[in-house]
Image (tube, rainbow, N blue to C red):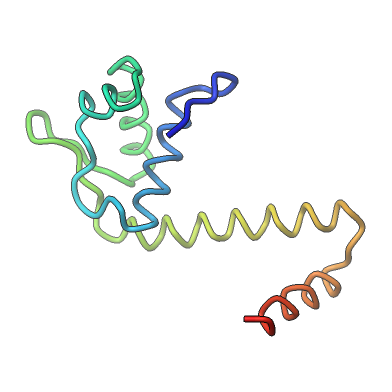
Length: 115
C-alpha cells in the first residue's frame, strides 16, 4: 500500500483493509496493529484508529490480547457495497461527460459482447 500524504492515513488503511477483505485476501484474522504499522511505516495509533473505525462500521471485531477478526457476512456485504460505489462513480463520470444512461448501457453491453 502506498501512502498518499494528502489524505488521512487511517482512512487509507480502512480502505485498503476493506479491499483486501472483499478480494478474499483477508478471510478471518486481520494483521495485528503492530505488524501492519511496521509494514506501512506508520504509527501504531494510526492503525488502531483505522481498526476502531472498521469495528464501528461492523466489519471487524477486536479482542484485547487475541487480535482483530473479520465479522462473518462482512466480506460479501463489503464487496457488494464497494462494487456499487465503483459503478456509481463510473456512471457519474460518464454522465458528467454528457452521456445518457441509455448510452452508458450500450457501452456496457458492447464491452460485454467483446468478452
